[in-house]
Image (cartoon, rainbow, N blue to C red; front, side, top):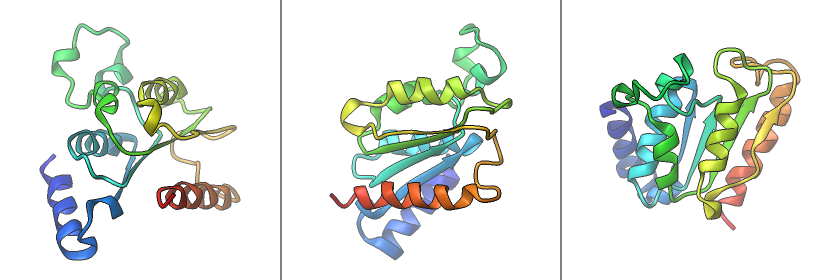
Length: 149
């Protein structure tokens, strides 16, 4: 987590001066560090989770027996996030089941929950491929603009 903390501090100190101007973005494995940081910072502007998982271990097994070894317990951390959260997940994802995105969406505090984007006919790494990039940009833009409201 050292890397994301260092980058975050540098951005706040050198670019924005206000944490509320920072939107964290975590895709797949990156959802772990992004969720971690958002759960520990009260003034983050927003959090985008793209093809996220509920926990590193739950990608491998639904068993909770190894939960104590999990370095990315997103499902627990997301409950502590105090900023708007936008979740993007492909319904055809075979690497990280779409149900991980659904579970995270349900775990987000109601006052921080925004409409997710469940992308039909897309998997883990192809959401922005082809013409889908247009809708991706539009939805991200809508989310970021909503942070100003």
